[in-house]
Image (cartoon, rainbow, N blue to C red; front, side, top):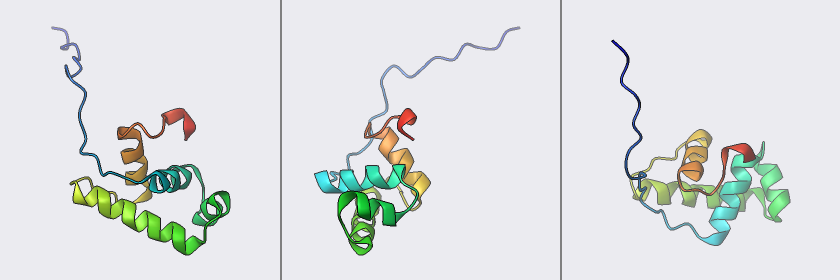
Length: 90
């Protein structure tokens, strides 16, 4: 007896959109590709406090649509799910 062949879902999963602003997307992408918030701040010409504020708002928007993003790993997953970043960019 052979194992059943994997069949992908007929339609891609549709995630609820958190409606991130352009700047929130920039901060999210910088955060998931950088080692620290300090580097994000330098790259985007922001203070670390402003980076933290953006990340807090991003997490709140994901939570509001039922997509928890309480960790950096979860934010990476959300960025991948939403097509904001590709695996090879990490």
